Image 1 (cartoon, rainbow, N blue to C red):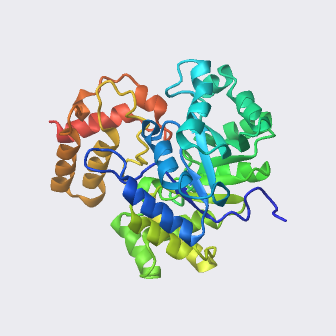
Image 2 (cartoon, helix red, strand yellow):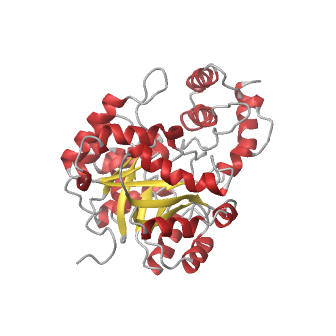
Image 3 (cartoon, helix red, strand yellow):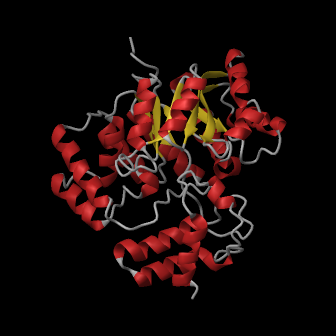
Length: 377
């Protein structure tokens, strides 16, 4: 018998947040189907999406690529209710659940979450009575397991798990870059979850791709330890090796990423003592790297009155900081702001919408000022 919910679940999950796109910006459904087929063929079963991902296109893609094509009992689906985006009223927030059911055609959700709970939005979840609403849907048989995803301090997590002792699971940002970071507190939040005996779904194991394409000094460490292992494999296996993990979500964007992930997670083995030492060496090197730790979730861009492509601008800035590639950075920036209707870093009006939405709590306004000084001067 499992010691905890999801112990026997395959430790690789498919995140439907960063799906491949066609030139017109829509999801490449044919490639997504191929990715789902390869993932299912390898044995994993957990798929994660959310009401707000791609303005609903992610849930629709899940229906077309998975739910309409496979027996319902052969996979598990997780999606989320977001009280602070696209939810101006309590009724609108609750309607997200029923819209998600319709979009996905799933019939029920195996896992359902309150989305990105933080101190700066908890009042909305309480005001909208989201906690009781979700449990009502569970009692109606439309949800099997309920929980919440979380981006905040271990003290606040301890408070929430104390106030809601019946939560089935939580979703945490865990990766080796953030493991000892006092701001993201990956280790500390995981330890709180273990104290409460609440199992964990891991999100951002490669930190928005930063650990799949690490800075040169970190890449050198990992390559020296195992030249045949992908950089992403180190990060995903690190998270999957922890106790109490249901699965580790990877937001895969192409078939090659799926192939790589299933190659080492089909027969997953936890990191050895020697491999953990390599990870610790890499983590220490990362602490000395000056970069913007953006995970490219795009929560900041929804509702930006200037339509500024903030993650793309930060990516360009990091190209300059980390790789000392000024020419490449300027090229990336020009491509980002040349899209139709896109704003420049200097167009920021400091409204603060982005900072309220950022799960990494980045000082987005100040960072955009720095980017503007470099790229718009």
